Every structure is written in structure tokens, then in C-alpha cells.
Image (tube, rainbow, N blue to C red):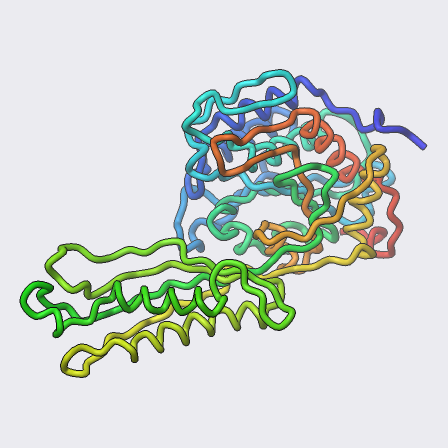
Length: 410
């Protein structure tokens, strides 16, 4: 059996590429510069311009944005050209904290030279890894199945780019591999789902010095509800009846002058759980707590405030089986490289959540990022190189998985 050296990449070129990509500013909705960079490097490597398209995800996203997802489709080559299409993907946006970073290398580790910024290896390392794989295949004559490479936008703000995808635009791939945070040996086969809530708490304004009894404070109303949620175990880690989830109130906005009983505050909150029904139970607990707070806080005339909830499903959970073809393919590719897979189910959202919802079985693999979303973020280059080789193995179809679906032309 061929060893890991068969899946060779140009390490120096791959490392130079990721260093260059991490330095390009591009938080969510501002990804056009990095999208143009990817497009240019593909064309320079020999990709046909018509094979590279940008979709209209930013026009459909509630956040707007500069550009859509970037899709590059590569026809199969050699004896594997009639196998099922495979998808390799990563996202190109970073968190705002990474804007302005100056990547610096010290041995095997890359960090931001500006201590005020994150590195942006989440997920420029994944974006650089799949670009490296695409360029490697464009450079040489290696046989491979039909491939789709996908660079998603707006992942960090609720998977907004991948929500707008259709499998037809991607060529209907049978297997998907998402390159995101962590160790390349870790295969994420499940992730939680999330519901977002915007809670508008409306009290009754009054002069706080002369007639406070005529008012209903939106601040007090919200505080009563929050305290009740905390006391009953519906905030933070939520464990009820053998089920487990989380909730958080991440922002509270409102109020103004100290001499006015606050009329309005807005809260932004979330509920997460792998089980959809339990996720909804958490949301119901929020609704009940705020409704009870309204009844508990009338003014002197018996008038009460009101609460309005805007509730939306952010992304659904997914859970793959180890026997699924995409999971077996990822595990077999790791074993071809002399590694053993580590299985993970996580409580964060990934673009893989949306790809699985679109009907494309997708597993996530790490690219060597550590302490993402912080100024201590780093990239381990040995793991980045391993992720590139792992991706090349998957792109070539050399994971040696056997399934009927892998023999159909796509």
C-alpha cells in the first residue's frame, strides 16, 4: 500500500499561501478581497474562469454583504472520473477580532504579530488548505473523481452563507469534507443546533423623580425574568430530565436618561441543544419567564408592560454514524496517512450543519488552529501540512472506501 508520501504537496508554497491569506482583512460580510485572492490563484494555476462562480448568498442574507460563496468545479480525471462527486469546503470570513492581524512565524507556530488581534487561522487555514489541494490537482495529472471546492462567506454570523446553497449549484456531491478548526485527526461527526431570540421588553415610561410609581421599568422586568431563568436552571448549562443544552443572553441594549423609567430594552439570546424538542423547551422556558415577569410588575394604576419575541431557527443539529460513507472515507484517509481518527460531537455550529441539512453528508476536519476567536490564537504548521495531505487523499479518492454511490457518475 502506498505510504503518506504519495499525497505530496509543496509545503513551502502551502505555508506561504496561508500566511498571505491570514493577512487579508475580511470579517463576515467583508470577504470580497479574500474571494478575489482565491479566484486569482485558481486562474493562475490553470482553472478555467467559467468553472469558477460566485453565488448570490449575500443578496439573500439578512446581513447583506460584499460577495457570495465561491464555487470551483473540477471535472474528474483518469479512471476515477466516473465516481461520485466530492466536496471540499472551508469558510473565508473571520471574526472581527482578526481584522488587521500580522501573521508571524516562530518555528512550527504562527501567531498574530499584533497583540490586539486574533490570527484569523479560523478559517483562513481551511481556505488555504483546500486552495492548496485545488492548485496541486491543477498542476499535475493525478487521477481523481469530479470535485467541487467551496469557499463560504458569513459562517461566523450564523452560517449565513452556507444557508443559501443548493446541492444542484454544487454539482450534487455525494460526500462533503469541511475543513475548519482543531486537530486534523479529529473528525466532527455531529454538532448542535441553535435558535436565536430577539426579546423586546416594553415597559411604561414615567418621570423617575416625581412619579416613578406610574412607570413600569423594562430593565426591572427583564431582570426579574433573567433571575427566574437562572434560579430554575434554564440559563447557562441546562440539564433537565436526562437532556442537555445551553442558553445565553449575550446582549442587553436600551435605556437612556437616569430620570426616566426605562420604557424599552432589547435582549439578544440563544438556545442550543442537539435534540430539537429540548431546544424548543428552553425557548418556551424563556417565554414563560418573561410572561410571568410582566404579570408581577404592574404600575400603580394596574397597567403592565409587554414582551415580544422574535424567534428563528439559526441552524439544525446533525449526527452522522461511523458507518456512513463520508465518515468511513475520512477515517480511511487518516489511516492511509498513519493516523487514527478521534471522533467528536460538538456544541458549536459549523457550515457542515447546513450542508447536512441540504442533503450532502459532510464531516468536519481540523486544520491545526488553536484558541480561535482570541488574541492567543495560533496555527500549528505541522498540523496544517497534515490537513493538506489529508485533503489531497480525500480529493484523489484514495481513501479506498467502497460503496455503490461512489461508482455513479456525477
